[in-house]
Image 1 (tube, helix red, strand yellow):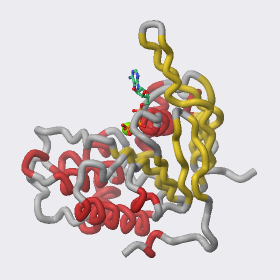
Image 2 (cartoon, protein in one colour):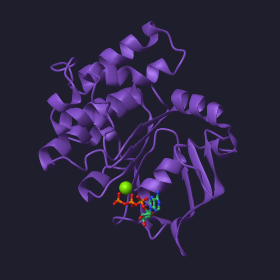
Image 3 (cartoon, rainbow, N blue to C red):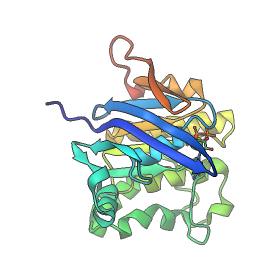
Image 4 (cartoon, rainbow, N blue to C red):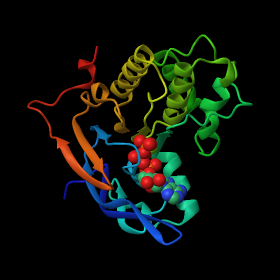
Length: 240
Ligand SMILES: Nc1ncnc2c1ncn2[C@@H]1O[C@H](COP(=O)(O)OP(=O)(O)OP(=O)(O)O)[C@@H](O)[C@H]1O
Ligand SMILES: [Mg+2]
């Protein structure tokens, strides 16, 4: 049986507010192969962030299963899940969520404190990330002293410092202007090329989504395939 990097089976998430029920995610199923870049598009409020958070084990589903490399994360106990997440997954949030009192470098290194990896094993990754994401200029600055694009690149480096097999990115370029968005995407895809991880990205931006191997659309909680593979697989290094 093929082992997918990510597989979800009929994931459902509902929010109850007074006497109304919102079905934020309605039986969402997806299978993603290792190394694939999948984009999820859809209008505001359609359930994209909720679904991404559930895929990454940051939120729980009401029904359905989420498997990462064949392991059912919906069945894991909280401490088992957080260890598994730290070892295997990275997440770039819709709002960057950097810790304001920590420098850029300290923010990047936060996930290493939760893993038992030796300093040696991440120093090389850190150097590569700082180079690839062009963060060499301001490593000791606080987030408030960085531009939006720089903050987002720090958030990406933080999500990748443990070399996760799968990176979830929720509108990583959403708050950036066109030039910065293109630059961050280019660097993200450059990093993906170097590190080879699977990438699941939520984006409003169709010009960004078109660089994905496949595009899915979330519509009122329902996930469907918008664009399948087109001919020979596009490689991320085609992006210039
Ligand atoms: N904690 C919550 N409590 C109640 N309702 C929620 C909660 N989080 C999300 N929702 C609702 O679930 C639906 C999906 O929200 P979600 O944030 O997943 O959408 P989205 O597609 O990411 O939107 P956007 O593009 O604006 O980020 C919305 O109707 C939202 O109001
Ligand atoms: Mg969202």
